[in-house]
Length: 332
Ligand code: ATP
Ligand code: LTN
Image (tube, helix red, strand yellow):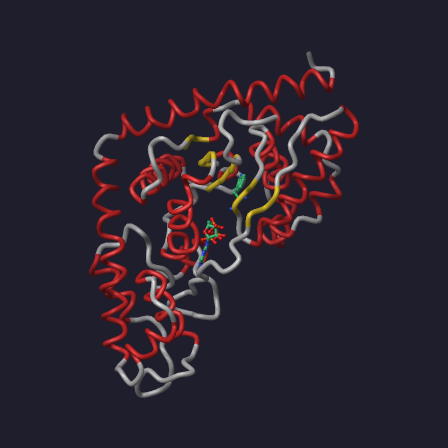
C-alpha cells in the first residue's frame, strides 16, 4: 500500500528510557532534523517497549514528555507525526497476532534479549522476550519502507521482514517489507570517562561522568568535559589517543569542520584549551535546544494534545492494516 504522499515512509521508534545524550543528538536526532523533508516520517515514542524492564511510573511519564519536548526543541517540525505508542491500541493488538506467528526459536536467537536478560533469564519479563514482535507491529502497521536504526537493531528488522514474509506467503500480500536505514558514517561518540565504549544511556545511568545529556546545564557540561579522559602526552599531538580523538570528533561534528582543520587548530595546544573549545561548542549547540525545551515543557497540556492529535490522525491507517490482518487470519 502507498502512503498519501509520494515520499517514502520512514518509521523511527525511540524508547523513553532516560535522558538523551550528545551521542543520540549528534549521531541520530540532528540527522533526522536535517533529512525530515525528504521522507514521510513517523516518530514513535515506544513506551510499551520501555516497560519490558522495570520502570518507575512517575519517571516513565516524565521521560515520555521529555523525549517529545527534546525532539520538538531539536527542530523536528510540528507537522511531522510524533505520537506515543500506547495511544494507538492497534500496536499491542497486532503485536499479539504476530507473536502467534513468530516461532520461539527466532526470539531466542535475538542478541538484545540475550544481553538484556543476561543471567536473569528466568526472571526477565515475557514482554522482553516478545519485544521484537511488538517492534515488528510498529513498523508493519504503517506500510513502512525504511527504519533508521543503529547496527544493534538490524536483527530486529530482519525478524520483522521474516514474519511479514511468512504471513504474506500464507495469506497473500498483507505487509510491505521494510528495510533498515543505517547511517554509513554517523558520528560515533564515545564515553567521556572511557573512550573505548560508545556513549550510551545505560552506561550513563551507572557513571555520572560518562555522558553529556542534551539537557545538562552549561556548568555541568564544563565540569564533565574538564574530567574527560585525555592522552598521557603533555599536549595535543597526532596521532592522538582515543580520548582526545573523541573530544575532537565532538567538536568537529558540531562545527562541521574536517580533520585537517581541527588538527591545525589544536596541534600543540594544551588539553585545557581543547576542552574549553569543546565545551563552548557543545554549550552553543545545546543552549537554544534547552531554551525551546523549557518553553515547550511550560505547557504540558499543549504537548500532550499535540501527541494525542498525531495519534488520532494515524489511528485510521493503523486500524486499516490491523483489520486486513484480522480478516486474513479469521478473526473477523
Ligand atoms: P541504550 O544504552 O539504552 O542502548 P543508547 O544511548 O545506545 O541507548 P539508543 O536508544 O539505542 O541509544 O539509540 C538512539 C539513537 O542514537 C540511535 O539511532 C543510535 O544509533 C544513536 N546513538 C546512540 N548512541 C550513540 C553514540 N554514542 N554516538 C552516535 N550515535 C548514537
Ligand atoms: N528497539 C528500538 C526501539 C524501537 C523501534 C521500533 C525502532 C521500538 N520500535 C520501531 C524502530 C522502529 C531501540 O531499542 N532502539
